[in-house]
Image 1 (cartoon, one colour):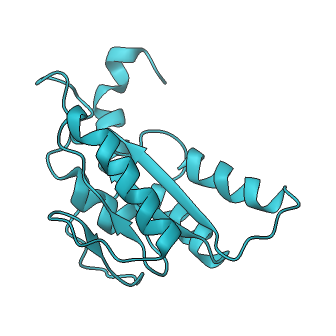
Image 2 (image 1 turned 30 degrees about the vertical axis):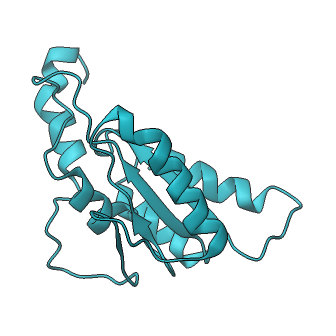
Length: 150
């Protein structure tokens, strides 16, 4: 959520006024610090900013505590939004360069994704989200004692 809020602030703090305002976010796990990610997303959307996502579903370690199997669904339900928003899941590091190129082409051309696994939808709130938008915070709380955090 901190990255989204920083990006929103960066739009406000510069002197460039583009035709579109888009935040690209990628990550290998759910939000684990700061305010809940859906709150940061909603703040960005209220400013007219679209958020696109590249969930990196490339687990390095089978026991990694931050990995969630449905990170792409988490991104759809909790992270991305706005006109033409999309998610392009990356399932292996060999796919990453092509995914970044594809993302840039889609954004520059203003196209909807047509590749398997990529989805576009209108931003809207639904109380019936598939993903738990607080899963990162719950994982953090579960392991807080191991990290000697208050």
